[in-house]
Length: 390
Image 1 (cartoon, one colour):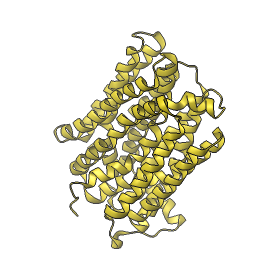
Image 2 (cartoon, rainbow, N blue to C red):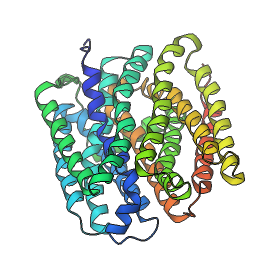
Image 3 (cartoon, rainbow, N blue to C red):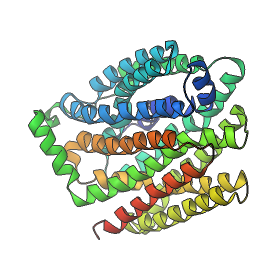
């Protein structure tokens, strides 16, 4: 099946449900804690709750999409996300808010995992990497705009409006799936598995060396990214006294670095090949985070000592993640939904752990964020060294 030219745009819009729910409310962390009577660092716990829901949800959404096709689970998931976003907007305290965040993530996980499986349904290798990079380009507009939009909303209204906007986004996504999205998995390729068979499939995928190493690289990079997401509001707004609006602009600048990396990635991949490219970018990524950690502890460069290495870090992640993801999925066309779900589960499990860690070791500086990011990228470097040679 040859994908329509507009399909990556639609898939990118669906995948952007995640950034809408993650990035738009980051500038509201201080206000959220105050209004919901939360302790310092409790806003990071609500972010971790979102990641827990994604971790659980993706394990089920992938297998559901392999069994029932891609459209039906997407429709059900976006409906749950839409209703739960309204629940977030109405929440009276942190525990109830966190519970609705978990529920929203369980539904939103369909939009996180199924578009990746649809890419694998339609293409492989360099073609899949190009399609995934286009999808990330469309999806990436949201991380640029969302924090700035959230900061603008906070200047005129409360944080609850952000979640009413998320509800509207979910409703639009559901309507787009209903009216325009084709199902890329024919009925004769759908797989019915019991619990035992499903667990056996996940074990088979997870123990395949190429999948394991590439998926860990992508997942650890994603974990480092979400450490940045959870830690940056504290660093920029509280340590450096940046306004929520200006924080959104800085966040957008770093998102441009990530998106630029994804677009360069698809162009340099044919020249260098996946293995050489991933190894080279991994070295650059570790170097960038080492600089960030040094600046965080020494205070060198002040705010710019944090912004510049973060921009380089996000750019390296953009270069690496589409290639690592496609390489992990490449040998699993027969069960792309399950393989995609497993990658997503690992990514958001690391992200959830990161959210709790940032909240637990909160000290009002960039040091916890930098150290945790460094741990992730060093572990990613170990995965890179263990990848099977071509």
